Length: 230
Image (cartoon, rainbow, N blue to C red):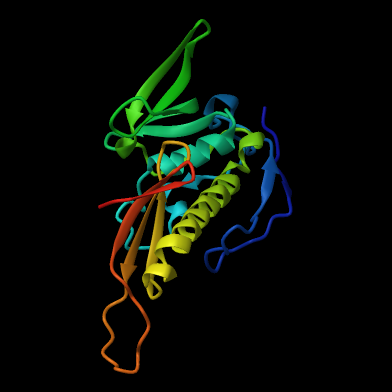
């Protein structure tokens, strides 16, 4: 027995490719003349999500860790997820991926790692720590509640960086002659720890340029307290 196709809202594009994200048609049923045994497997119901990329946290193409997850990036994302499950590639080298994992920060080891918790069976839940350097570039929240985690994480990460730079500038910026250069802040996995650096712009070639560049500066902010590196 065959059924006819019920097509709604279809548009024909015979002369070229359709524009991105434009619906070209929808249908119900199976093609006439195609038996059940010949029909392709049914597609699952579509579910949308909002992918979080490690590179979302940095606008600088020269950032050496732009494409990688760091403790600071994951800390903000994990806080924003609030325990919601995700899809995560735990080994970017071979593509090993876990669907339905919960993420936890792991601060008890010398190297940056993340704990990945997932259910193996009805009565067994495993929690394995993985080095962040091997985590795939994309993490995908699986639930509606987790969809806003990307924007919450990016916003809190940006605010933490901005506040760290402003705190250091008050003491080690203009008061010490560092007025013309680039400030950079990098949150770490440990809560409240941010590494801040300053790189002066190249020396002026124009004698009329008297802006104070100062010298390089590195340091950390740990829970609001500044520790310059000697």
